[in-house]
Length: 205
Image 1 (cartoon, rainbow, N blue to C red):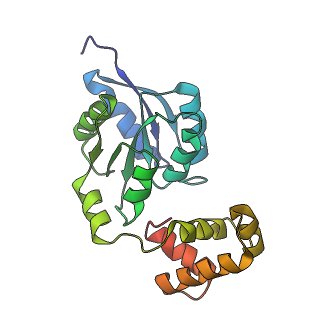
Image 2: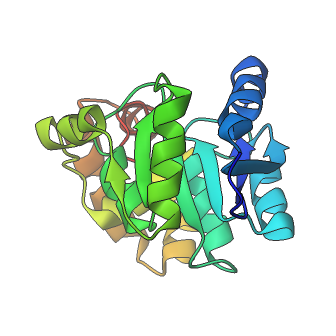
């Protein structure tokens, strides 16, 4: 056991067995303490705001609100929150958005608990850590979408019409249609909803 104050962590993952395993394994050497757990993105935001952990360990893909969306939501009140994001599939394009949101660490969900502990310590000390496979995927196939195109597709995923998207993004409807048309071309799809789905699957949103 260490005589130092444990690093307070919050675990957010919709896979109950994995989350429970990590909750049991990560504190074994006495340097980490699990202060709370969350099973989906909305719960993760609320728990993080309540418990203010030293490091949030959050899954990229969760129901109700994904990991990236959850981090974006909590950043409003906790801009300095340290975040370690876990992913089962290092999809292209995800890393860029994660870094843009200030995520300090990114690694595979298949990593050994001992490695996760080391990375949590590094993040707590103010360092950054990106797994090689995640970095490799981001270099191999980056997103071809512009920021405005991404914004339009995100609004499409929420079910808004072109006119509603235009109002929400403060753009002319014709401009939104041009962005969405470009998205169709870049994703090889025929509808804006299919374009949003493909972009999401490839980690571009």
